[in-house]
Image 1 (spheres, one colour):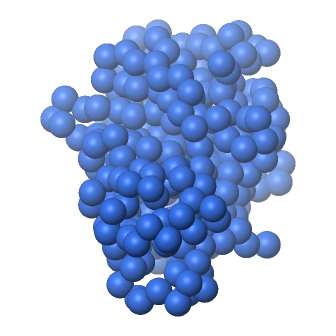
Image 2 (image 1 turned 135 degrees about the horizontal axis):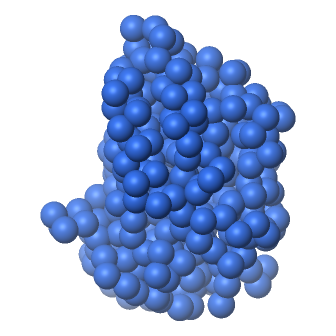
Amino acid sequence: MKHITKYEKIRQILSILKQPDYRYKQITDAIFKQKIGHFEEMSSLPKAVRNEFIKEIGNPVLSITPKIVQQSKQVSKILFAIPGDEHIESVKLSYKNGWESYCISSQCGCGFGCTFCATGTLGLKRNLTADEITDQLLYFHLNGYPLDSVSFMGMGEALANPYVFDALHVLTDPELFGLGHRRITVSTIGILPGVKKLMKDFPQMNLTFSLHSPFPDQRSELMPINHHFPLEEVMKVLDEHIQTTKRKVYIAYILLRGINDSAKHAEAVADLLRGRGPWEHLYHVNLIPYNATTATPQSYKESDHSGISMFLKILKTKGVHVTVRTQFGSDINAACGQLYGSQ
């Protein structure tokens, strides 16, 4: 089942109208170079052609509607309305060096039920289409922000939505967004068919795997997906990913106080990643302080500072590449695991 993207639809309409080939470039230039967000304002097109697009697609180029913008230091969170009376959220992160990074959603809600994640409490409403995914970035582009890097770490599990691959083609198309593959990060809880497809179709993209516990039984409790795609199987595929692409794989690890932040856990994470082969130095752990949320059933707490330091030190001592992720946006529920799409 394939949705055609708006860009494919534009080509189709131009073909039906028997327009010259250069019209497509006039439209993509209007959107991506001149940042024009409405067909009626594309003065390079004949009026009849503009009217046809307004009739077929609608006047706004965006298929999603920004509703609420929340801002805190270095972070903007946007609530978008999407067709079907649902909502999704996207986040813009502004780094001190001037780099603008975006965290976008791939699903409305999420059906995987990780116990510490607010988005998971919604259940899966539906997959987003390729247009709804890429329009989150297009909104920022039309508003004049540079698209330096993007991660699929918003609402939903990216690799459970087949339309994500159509979206990746749009984002990397030189006539459209033209994003370099290495500026895109796809995050997954371990959906193996998707990991394999990403490795085949987009080998240079960054891959992040959400681990959150090195112990399979505990991981199954925190993340029920572990029953379907057990940790051991996921790690074998990640090894293959590194050997094939020669690229790092990032391991995301949210620290939950008293649950997965003990010295025993840190040692087990190191044991999991060391001794895998000559490529093991390409595993990089991102430790993520937990962001409290009122939406999740359990009241998890953030690890304290000394606990985070201890975990970090053990991993470093064992020769694991590791960083602690800088926290942005927790004050406006825009941080990891907090996106909820509430109004």
